[in-house]
Length: 258
Ligand code: CAA
Image (cartoon, rainbow, N blue to C red):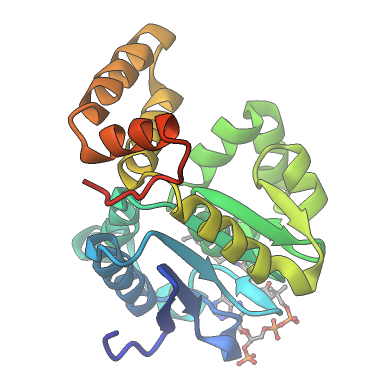
């Protein structure tokens, strides 16, 4: 893929792997990194050969937050004019499954980036947290909102106010991550999960993702209306015919994503 400087990326057997690559600063997320991430995600989202995307860091850090050096002299108007979180917001438009594999520090903007993933695998040694309160700021890329929706307002306030880090086990107990695995298995397990869902009907994966995120903010009845429309929509796909025919013929379905 393109000449990225803050990330690396490759495709293996239909799974795109994106790795954050600023190890000297624990993968601190600067504006170039978010822009490159968005570019890679969007290219893979358009690529028919790619069925799922895995995002990871390195053993020491998924990412230790937004780049403090880059933003320390910014003022409010600069951030407004830069539209600081535009690329971050666009990360939520990716339609394919995104699986995060987290080891080491996952703080601040790094935690927010992890929370942009649909499914999260974490090492037993991973540490999650929002330390912004110690810097005189607060999360700005959705951390406050997502943590509250995932763990509830009381617990979210406790973690955000204290700015302390939680273990992967705690993050799992609060429903913030999906699975905790041995450090050496994090990426392998995330890739395995990605390969498993890659064999399913791509349009089903896509519309399930859309429907689940809509459900987070919808009433049950509104969510069900939305769900039903997507259910009907899948009956316009070749894969629905193929999936049901394959079941009747007792063979494996050959999905095309159409
Ligand atoms: N931004 C810029 N540089 C960072 C960084 C960050 N978020 N986190 C770490 N680094 C740099 C350090 O400055 C250091 O660089 P030098 O070697 O040039 O001094 C290098 O990475 C290694 O870090 P440490 O020496 O500090 O490593 P450590 O093991 O002693 O500590 C740590 C690790 C506890 C994660 C510590 O680095 C730390 O507290 N980092 C900052 C965490 C943080 O506050 N994150 C939130 C940022 S604000 C944010 O993300 C806002 C938002 O919502 C968008």
